Length: 119
Image 1 (tube, rainbow, N blue to C red):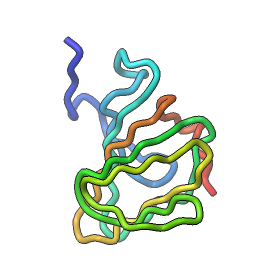
Image 2 (cartoon, rainbow, N blue to C red):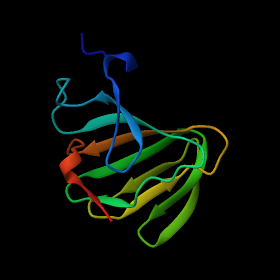
Image 3 (cartoon, rainbow, N blue to C red):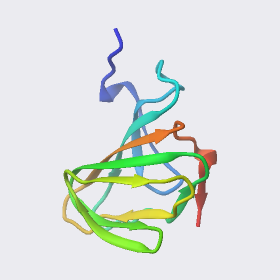
Image 4 (cartoon, helix red, strand yellow):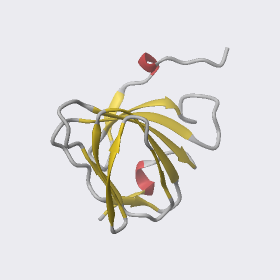
């Protein structure tokens, strides 16, 4: 059966400062070309500005609200919004709300710490 639950992976902090739980990643699952994680950003926290040399990311906000920085642009985000982050694009997200910000993050190729460059 090709099914996993959230409790299959432990949370860890990424280089940008968010906490993630890998939902599907080649290091732990039979997926090959992408990864899917749930990121958590606490109220009042902003992730470090960073970029990925190789990975294209898609953020899908599932709970909370915040301000997304994508290159020189800043815009508000809320539950239900999806954001495309091309490879090489500087980005960060600020949780300016009162509840935890939850984001589904899809990366292709799969997320790797060494592909994250802090700016």
